[in-house]
Image 1 (cartoon, helix red, strand yellow):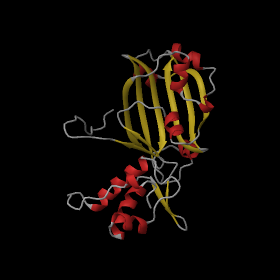
Image 2: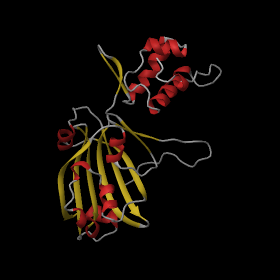
Image 3: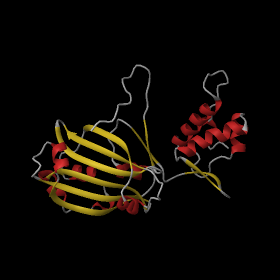
Image 4: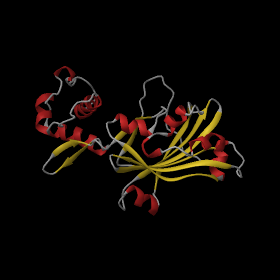
Length: 257
């Protein structure tokens, strides 16, 4: 089964962690290392290599499936879901770069690029509500399939230089860097579950019961707010992952308006 025999790590039978959880972690590690690109192992191959029961193998793989990392298809077995993306929490990232780094082509359909007033965005940016802002709205796609609806507002004096940019196949942060404009280097991001509107469902090709979530991001360059962003993401194609260790200060917070 192994693409790389050196990468195999046996499970610890003396560990208090259940074997299925150890196996899930081990398979995730190997996936992140770039293994199983051409073929994901069968349950029988997993039981043979790791010397576990078929029930343990199925349970570990089903956990990967629940997170959208792999999928089971009749007649094809278990395959890696190459249209699923993960992003670590607590890191500034570009959705464009994240998709491209995954080996997929990111394209955008520009829904709006304009200057207009928006009271909520102005409040987040610390600007007079009557002042016009640069507004960019895009449908983000990976390999031609819809991934997210991205809405960005910036101060007009920053955004005016972006009006002539072609955002079909580039990222906002890349264009800010190219034009030597202020680029976010800190800020916060809030993630919330979302009941998508009919328009969102149509653009994202969501079914009646498909989930989505909303990402709200305030980006600052130094202490200056330069970006307010609301992104609606398909819940079946994107995951956020938090890493933690003993002694670090982190945790869940109650949602607040």
